[in-house]
Length: 180
Image (cartoon, rainbow, N blue to C red; front, top):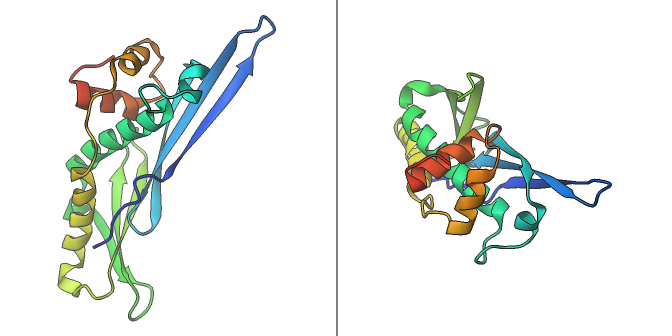
């Protein structure tokens, strides 16, 4: 069984300092789904985030880490709705004795087509490969952390422009039951 390194992704903070001394930040977070072969990278952007929240942890947790956790939660929810055997477009090996690679064709929330690749151990019998690939994705979804944000970060999120962060918005709804 293949597992996902759910820590994969990037966090980028662009800081703008104005002449009057004010500072603004744009936080760009991505999550890379890696089921043995990185194939799907999803990004959210918070265009005007207080820099102090990005650089200093709140209750021991950094804002960007929480953004990625909530993005993963939303991506997991989306995958649980769309990942099906019917979405498999290829199941193959690169060579005899090599691991299997199962490719799923998925439509992202914005309508773009994307491919999710899942690597399955070479020793897996051919008639079980597709089911093992599906099981790897479902196992990843089940282990996601759905605890609520701390109150201060939840209040901060309510004040931010989340229009370029649809996965973050969905993640907040999933763990708090309401939109910010």
